[in-house]
Image (cartoon, rainbow, N blue to C red; front, side):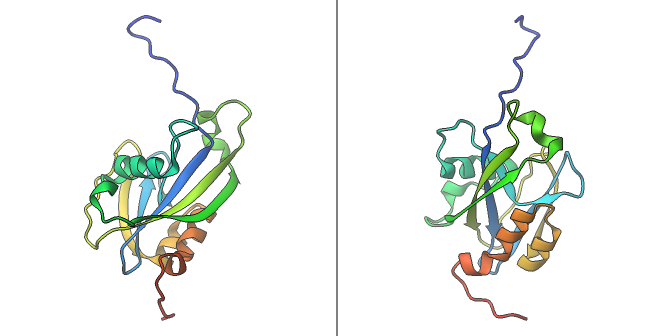
Length: 164
C-alpha cells in the first residue's frame, strides 16, 4: 500500500450502546442522522474492539456525537439500565459489518445531565439536535428499541412522574 492509499475501515463490532441523555426533568436529547435525514435517535455507537468496556464505549460515543464529557459530570450520571436489545441490522447499514453479520446487541444506558447542557454535534454524523419531553422524544425516534428505552425513562431514572 502506498502513501496515497488508505486501509479499508475495520468492520464494526456487532455490539453497541444506546445512551438516553436526559435532564432530571426528563427532557431527552435527540440527534438527527446526517446519513438519514428525518431519522432521530439517542446517542448510539459500536464498541471499538470486542473487549472495550461498555461504559467506555458510552463515554467515547457521547463525547464524539454531542461534545458532552461524561467524566466532568457527577458520579452516577451514567447508569447501566441492565437492558439489552438484539435486533436485525437495517440492510442500508450492513455493509459496515463483517460479511454475514446481520444482528447487533445493543446495551441501554441513561445519562443524566443538567438542564442547559451545551451540545456540539459531529457534523459528519448528525445535523440537528433537540431537547424534547420524554414522550415526544419517544414518538420522534425511528428505532423501536430507542423509543421503548425512552418510554422506560421515568421508571429507570428512579423518578415518579404523574400522568398529565
